[in-house]
Length: 119
Image 1 (cartoon, rainbow, N blue to C red):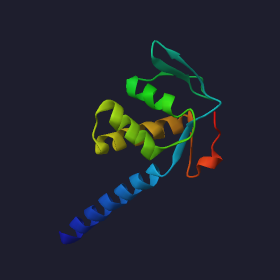
Image 2 (cartoon, helix red, strand yellow):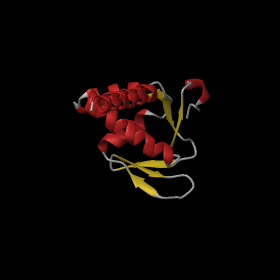
Image 3 (cartoon, rainbow, N blue to C red):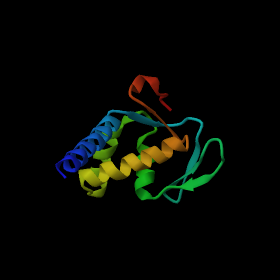
Image 4 (cartoon, rainbow, N blue to C red):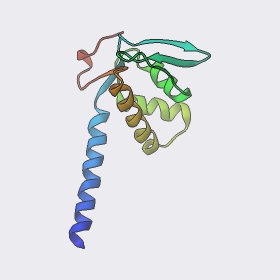
């Protein structure tokens, strides 16, 4: 029983370390991604599959803020300031959102800001 507790504790620490590691990355819009603002919302056509995605208000705010490379930690601070959300909730939601954008090739991620294009 004690070992299970230690295992759970270690798994929680590893998850926390992964989140902290992600926060050190920089994100920028993929210059190959077509998008427009329509009625205050970002409408994005994903590269490769041509699917149209409409972002909600928070997603649009983030999208507009990553026209140039920005650290994930700065994105979280921007969202916390604009939308009055806790740091833990912002981290969780933004990391999930960033991963979806990256998997759809809508944005580029790098540890080094200089490796990313300045759109």
